[in-house]
Length: 417
Image 1 (cartoon, helix red, strand yellow):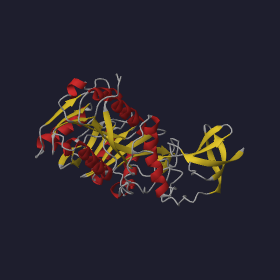
Image 2 (cartoon, rainbow, N blue to C red):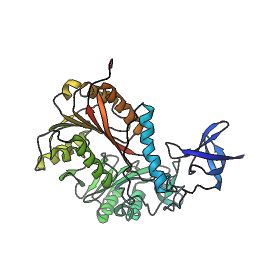
Image 3 (cartoon, one colour):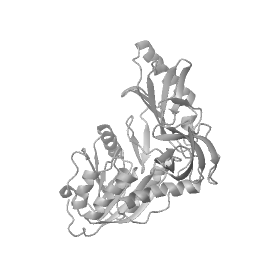
Image 4 (tube, rainbow, N blue to C red):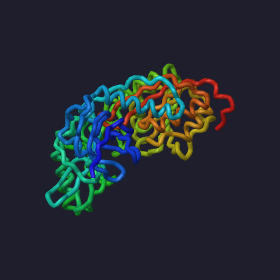
């Protein structure tokens, strides 16, 4: 049974939202103002016919749009899309009672993703490599991708050969492919068990294709040279599978914003430091103590620091900041702090920062909802939000980064942790 609905908004997940007698329903690939015929499917709906299109609807640039589950908003005119993405940050802040100015969205770039995750499956028709279908574990085979760097998309055929050497029947293989400064770094999970002859064939294949490194289920199979990236003029040998910003362009923007927010800081803390994305640009200007839980990331940072020149005083610490956040007493003495946690945010750590007296704090986040929660804790504890900058790193998706600058003031009367 079909029903006609009018789309009133685009929700936080990128789907159109229609209000019906039975409540709101999510309609993928529909835009505000559009009239569509839908068929209910689970908690959502499918568009059966587009009766009235939005004037903001454009021709999507990708041939796999609506099949591939990656870029769900390619059909929306850029101005409306960018306004909506900025509003994701504004809405999250307002939900926490934070009515503060938010900068215009820093736009994303096409053909800029230097890290992607491909899925692969061996089927009766042969090896399939691509991206997951929208809301599905099926694999959509692709030969191009308008958001990914050419250095990766030009190697899709080679990656298909690698997947073919590792795929087991009815098993899903995942390939995380990263463009490093000296070649492709590939981390694979879900591989079948290899006989020695199969393993040797894989080694020869990867050497012939001149990949920088191949790791399979955590084991390095081939490493022609350690993949490297540059952070603030410091070369870091990145660990396999370690966290990185998805695009170099967004990384550069985030680094500049962090340095701007820290201003004339002399003694800085870098929390959730990773491999040193912000640490090393900071360490060129100020003394830095970096805190990170992941051992391979910390080891990579330490090796890079030993070889680097022109750094101020640098120190590091392994610590799980979720289980054992730095106390407000440990934070005392630092005049600047940056934290860049995973999507879950840094609630426990932020509670300690709120009790400390740090003149400048910079928050970097990939989740507006947890960012707003953390900022509310800081504001109630005595910090003032000076600036918030949303950054579009994942073009045509619902994901948005944001950077917040805060300065210390007095806590609200009666405030307690």
